Length: 193
Image (tube, rainbow, N blue to C red):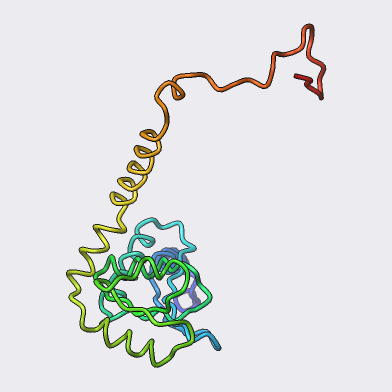
């Protein structure tokens, strides 16, 4: 009766339970879904895991999904800056989007095409135009204009120009003080300078 009671398999069942729990935490699930009303399709990957390798797999899965698209369509007119658009261009995927917010600055003739918000035929034309683009050129443009290196170079250029505009002697002088501190001890809670 002990053989068929399951008691002899307790350690095996517990071990399998631990393996199952670890596998579920480290598995990457990809789900595409559409929000009712706004027409946006999203790629959702759960990232509520303490498994670093799973998180890296999730990033790679998103990149593979975006890179496998012929074009990336960003039809949301409520989002002023679409990070996903940058990710698509970094994958070499041409973009068709609505000209809203930062997208008008990000998407160029080399990386995609834009349509006015609310212009459905215009967005369809933008998709057709994006499909004709060279994916290598899209990736090259993303690297040249939107990479970390390009961002740092841009900041350094702004700071260099700002320093050139300042008179040199002004940079070397200490900033003016509001006044000397009062003689004697400073009262707590209030400073009268």
